Amino acid sequence: MKSDPEFRQLYHRHRELDKQVLDAELGVLPLDDTTLGRMKKEKLNAKDRLTRMFDTRRH
Image (cartoon, rainbow, N blue to C red; front, side):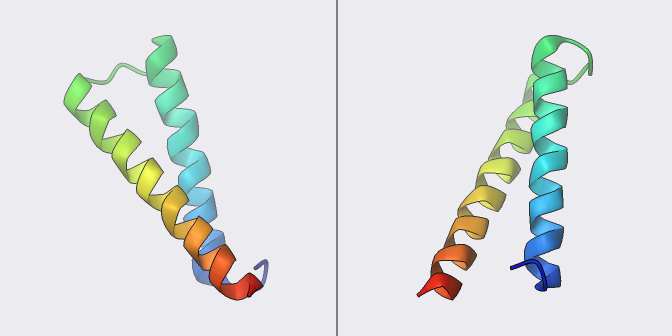
């Protein structure tokens, strides 16, 4: 997985979104509810895709 650039990029995007969502929920990053909702959805989609990629390559 470490050698797969798509996986790495998606993993880093997920981590970035995770931090931004947490910051927004803590009030450190001011975001409106619509933007926060979009970010959460993108984060979940990235996680689902990472999981599918991992499961596909593991088998």
